[in-house]
Image (cartoon, rainbow, N blue to C red):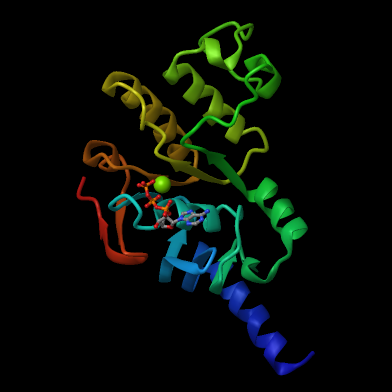
Length: 223
Ligand SMILES: Nc1ncnc2c1ncn2[C@@H]1O[C@H](COP(=O)(O)OP(=O)(O)OP(=O)(O)O)[C@@H](O)[C@H]1O
Ligand SMILES: [Mg+2]
């Protein structure tokens, strides 16, 4: 085995053994918009351990969703490295990304990615608060979000990513949704959620602020 490969392998092993499920190194994303380049992420260095509960905050356009999409293996970085559960995923092709995504990640999108015409029960089987005969557009925002969370958990991923999961909800429904995340956290899942709301972020144990495509601060939440 070439020395370099050995080093990379033992590095991955070290990450797993020390409980690091997500690690990024100088992660960057540039979107090409015709002649223009948008530097959405400008070198993000991040380590998240198994079972952590992390909130990501920051102004609109700061790169939160871009970072979530990269962490969630929905997109590839322009440069930098990303290890997920001990694998260097920044080097993988789309098929390999899809495989790892399905295995490791549950994604709750801000806009509900449910087929409007399928009944909700086709998408999930879970203790929902309705009888499963409604189409998604007949559900309330909170009900739809429960379906989205349920659907994200279908493959029992250990990492749950949620981009503004309470964005369109009234505060009572928002708190109910946060109770679901709290449960997932207690069961040992790793939770990362994006939010604009400080109250929501306080549910997490660590808050990362993103500004202009970089981490501006990364602090534990005092409980
Ligand atoms: N697919 C894309 N093509 C081109 N530019 C994009 C694309 N997606 C995002 N951007 C740009 O990248 C930057 C970061 O966007 P991103 O969606 O990550 O921000 P955000 O922090 O999630 O914002 P918000 O809080 O409004 O959701 C913005 O300037 C945005 O316009
Ligand atoms: Mg966003």
